[in-house]
Image (cartoon, one colour):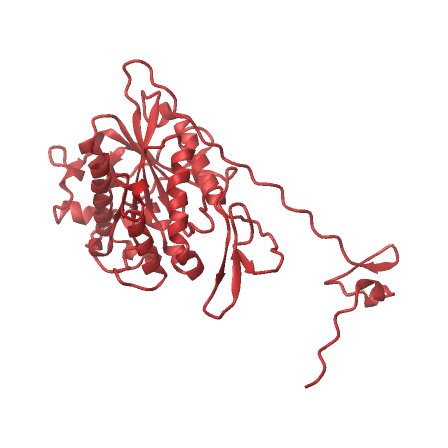
Length: 390
């Protein structure tokens, strides 16, 4: 065989500017030399845990349920129109979800105790905030009102919040808030990685081994043994932003729940997994990352006893061995009291495949079928109510 090519010459061997290779060397002070490495990126801010405020004598704290995930939780179920997959058709024509319709007034019903708040932003703590909901729970659409610094934008699609919110309102006598803070196309094992979660090595189907980023490392993964080159994003940056944006709501609780001055975080809802399912390294580590998420959220919100409900991807059947199947297994394992005694009675998993009104995928937003989102929301709400029972 021919001999291997010689290694590239060091920059100092090039004596004139025309011969100095621009991609690897720099001409300065009459010499060709190796350019200095770029400075390391500035450390990202850490979002500290919060302590819920104490209530004044005689006042009940708002029971807050934080809702996180990606586009599943974000919600793309169609509200309006005459198609048979819209919320309007389901309620007004099929007579489904009767609690959403006030027959006496011929209009959408409005909860008297459950507040629906949704803040959204892409990335970390400095990202712009879009306020998409801030009203008592209802199927109607309106442009939300909020504090300065949040950009109001009416959302004419639904996620699981209506099914969840009305289930909670029926079961809880205290005031309730569902607080959604999320955005689409985010991975638990990358964008929403909980603080303190370490990286790991994974060998893929081609026998190539990768190092996956730990919290605040970048990029998402790199060949093992090589030096990672940071990008303009880092592991956990969406966790930081989603948490910070939720804090902005809780820090102004009276703006988002009129008359309230205190709250406690009673539970978390998690519907996510599409992005992780597309990478077997993330899929195989989903279980450990989900455990870390549950534990870290309880610390972040000063709520060690908060309940946690997760829901699987709607297209994934039990027995599936793909990335989606691994994520379904991970969720059901974490909710298994034998495997995780510390989560007995405080973590539940909802299997959503039987709840899809029409078969679709999370990547296609379940065909924008509002009935699928409603069915999942009702099941998640029922699971949380069961966990809250003494």
